[in-house]
Amino acid sequence: MPFDRFRKKYVSYFRTDLDRVSIINWRIDGNQDMIVSHNHSSDTKNGNYIFTRESNFLQKKAIEVYARGVNGTMVHPQNGELYYSRYRAGDIRRYDFNTREDKLVFSNPYSAVAVYMVMHPSGDYAYLIEYEKHFIMRTDYDRATKTFKTPYTICGAAGNAGYADGIGTNARLNSPVQGVFVKNPDYEAAGGDQYDFYFCDKANHAIRTLTPQGRVSTFAGRGNNGTSGYADGDLRTEARFNSPQAITYDETRKCFYVGDTGNWLIRKIAKEE
Image 1 (cartoon, rainbow, N blue to C red):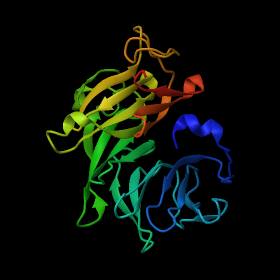
Image 2: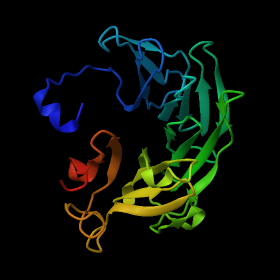
Image 3: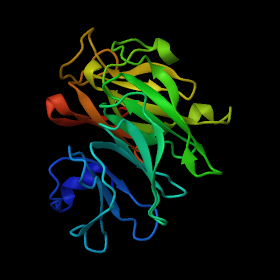
Image 4: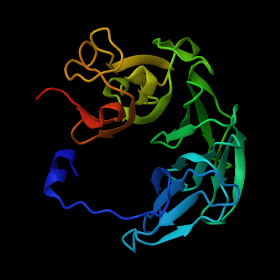
């Protein structure tokens, strides 16, 4: 549904009874039920829950695997398995809905860090966004074994916060959070990966772009030689954000919506009509 039509619709809500919901995903099979993750601090509590569409998302059932500090989850778009990160343990795990098998995929280079994960639309790879360590890794999918491989750095430098556009480890990020893949029509003629990755660089108060080749540039924010703030206008010379943390893309209307948390607003980025 186009975002500007929300005001014409009735909005309802349901209670999760979870005190710290971190992220929501969807199963790709069956009723396409909702997966809600719980970022808690207990070693003896479940970390992921299924809210059934059949119950209008009023009934939940735990995925019966203990998981502490779940910040990031993703579902493979073809095979449907669930991947989730654990904060304290510093690892990424894989849960198979069919066999109910839960297993380690790989260890994260650091423990006690929040890892957010975004799957490429093809399912061929995913980005692991290392929030406290200020860099992004890439993990490639092995279709023969139906699991992801050991990740490697795609941009930023681990433990080195900063602000710099550039390629790979020459780029500097500061608390990157959520991102979204967007098809770039300029890539069609060349073939290969046709998606850029737009992500919220929270502490830099900017929206950054990561190309398939690992080049980072600034898409929006930090206008008028500033950093944080609130201003609409030209994306690079005027627009300013305050700790943007969430971003999504409306493919139909070709526009972005940004959760500008420090300004308590949802901002829209689109071409002038």
